[in-house]
Image (cartoon, rainbow, N blue to C red; front, side, top):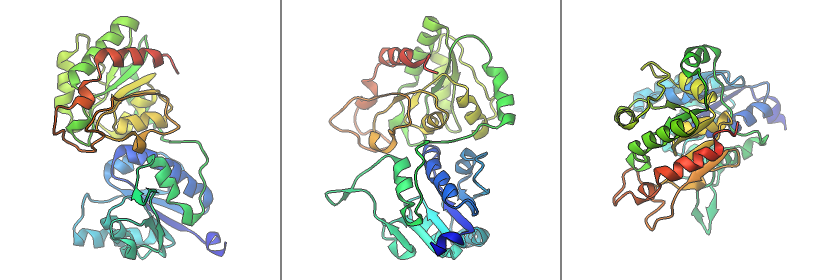
Length: 342
């Protein structure tokens, strides 16, 4: 108990991927609730820090270089040291993250005992295992379970993100009009194996426009230009492009917060939508639902069981049957069930 009374500085090394960051928010909130007098600092890639912008219990965000070298690690550790004096929580599984935490001099370094990095940790949490083998669980629960050494508890409120007033003011003029507002998110950072055919997204958007007068918003990010252009080229009805070609995580959060429904792959946009209580029709292929399907999500996950999946591979080595067997008509009919859910 004496340790709990004197915690003043806690550093959280956050996950790299947008969806994982969103799923980390219940854990970050649990830390803040357990240690209300402490300063909670998060550190990670710029996109990861941008996702968390506006959460009131985060004192500051510090951007770290992607895959830093030795000199960058030392520099980053010096910058983080004042904010990690009492504890560093290491959400990523990498050895690099554990080394960085060690270099900060944090008194306690909490992380999962995996990847031969146990010597870098003071508090080693065992990963979920079945018959001795590490098995995936919903990432939000994995992150919460990591906090056991700090005696933090889940408040069961789920994922949480904020949309800033400035970003809302930028996107709302593009989203005005009649009819349900449906996000179309055809991209995914993991790799092409996660991508449902872009022309089918166009067909679903056209179907929603023709059947119920839906206004479909195209949500794509950097590196997804080809996918975006394929949707636009194949759609009979124009899709809303809310960001005027100037993409940002802040505007993406704001746009998603206004949706009646999101249709997309198993990607970061899905979990941002979950954080805002937006129903999701998720088209899932090569990845296991054990990682990303949790109790907070509204909507439906569409997937087909295939003999080669879930393979967890970024590039399909066969015929991509896990995704191509999901038809545009199936997605359209599923979306119609949820489009008025809010």
